[in-house]
Structures are given as structure tokens and as C-alpha cells.
Image (cartoon, rainbow, N blue to C red; front, side, top):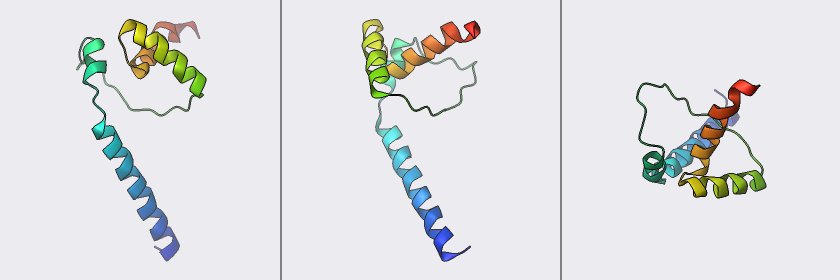
Length: 85
């Protein structure tokens, strides 16, 4: 491995470590309780999506009315409407 690519690998690993730490700090308990608990029978996979701030704000507002987190609200919307496409 070259010196340059070695540095890039270390930077990427350091960034990933920071992301893991931030995820570990987030208390998902309220989202899980609001969603009615975990469903162990469904396989879930993490995904990443980039959304505009105004869309996230709308999701947060609608989610708060239902007592959900915005990511949970997004999952509800996707599940309810995925078959329409």
C-alpha cells in the first residue's frame, strides 16, 4: 500500500469511528417505544439518504404529531406508499 493510500484508509476509518460513536450516543428508545417495539421477524438494513432541510423539517413536524421520530415517520411513509410506484 502506498503512503498516500494508507493515509486515506486511516482517514476513512477515523471518520467511520466518529460516525459509530455518534450513533451510539443517540438514544433510540423513544423512537422504538413510539413504533411499538422492535420486530425481530423483519430483517432491516441501514441505508443512507440525503434530504433537503425543509423536507426533514416537515417530517419532524408530522412525526411529532404522531409521537414518532422523523426517521420512523419516513419509514411509515415509504411502507404505506411503496406499492404505488
